[in-house]
Image 1 (cartoon, rainbow, N blue to C red):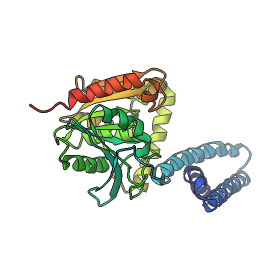
Image 2 (cartoon, rainbow, N blue to C red):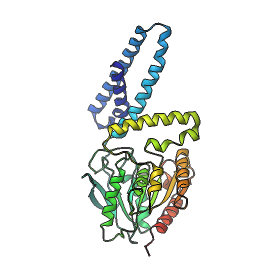
Image 3 (cartoon, helix red, strand yellow):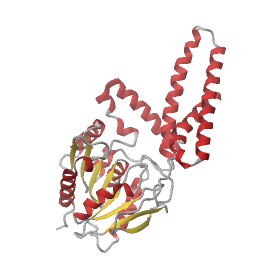
Length: 343
C-alpha cells in the first residue's frame, strides 16, 4: 500500500502538479504536499523492505526501486497528457472573424477565420499546450496566398470547451467539426479543403485525413506519433535503447487509454493507408531525427501521395522561422497543386 501511494503521489506531483504551478498558490501548495508525501512514502517503503529482508536478499530493493521509477515515469506522462492545464485564449490576427462550432459529441470549439480569395481553405491546428494564436504567422502566409484559414483552439485549449488531451486523441472529432464549418461557408469550395497541422495538430491532421474523405490535402509539421503502434520503428533505429523506450511507451499509452474518455486513434501509418483522397506533405525539423524517421516511413507507405521536406537547422515546428521563404514556397505550392479546382 505504501508503494502504491508513493507511485500515485510522485506521479501526480510530476505529471500534473508542476504543469499547474502558474495556476495559483493552491496549485503550488498541493504540488509540494504531493511531492513531499510521495518521497516520504518512498522512504518508508524502502526502510520496510530493508528491515524485512536479510542482507543478501536486500538486493531485491534495486529492481523494486527501478520498477517504481518506471511506473512513476509512465503514470506521470499519462497524467500530464490527460489532465493538462487549459491555456488562455489568444486573439487572432487583424481582419480575422471569431467563429465557433460544435463537435459531434456536443463540445463547443472556438477559433477565428481569415477569408480567402481563391475558393480553397485550410483548417489550421496548433500543437499541445498552445492555442490558435500560436499559428498566426502560418495563417498570415496562407491568407496572403489566397487561402481561407480557419484556426481553431483544440478542445480544452484557449476559448474551446471540453477536456484537453495533449496527445490529440480528440483531434479527429475537432477537425471534422472544422471541415463541417468550412464546407458550409459560401466562400469556400467544399471540394477544396485541406488541413495544416503543427506537432499535435500534425498528427491530428493525418488521423483526420484517414477518416474524412473531404480532406484533400494535409501539411503535417513535426509529427512523430501518439499511440504505441507509432513507435514500432524504435528498435530498428536505436537497438536496445529503442526497445526499452518502446516498452515504456507501450505502458504509458495503456495507462492513457484508461485515463482519457477519448477513443484510441489509428496509427499514423494506418491513417495514411486509409486516406482515399488526401495527399500529404510531411515537414520534419533538421534538428529532430525522430521526425525525419517518421516522415520517411510514412512516405514509403504512400509513394506518390506522400512527400517529405526536412528543414535544415529548424527546431520542432520551427520551419517557418528557420526558412520562411522555403516554407512559403513549398507549402503554398503544395496546397495550390493539391487543392486545384475539380474538373
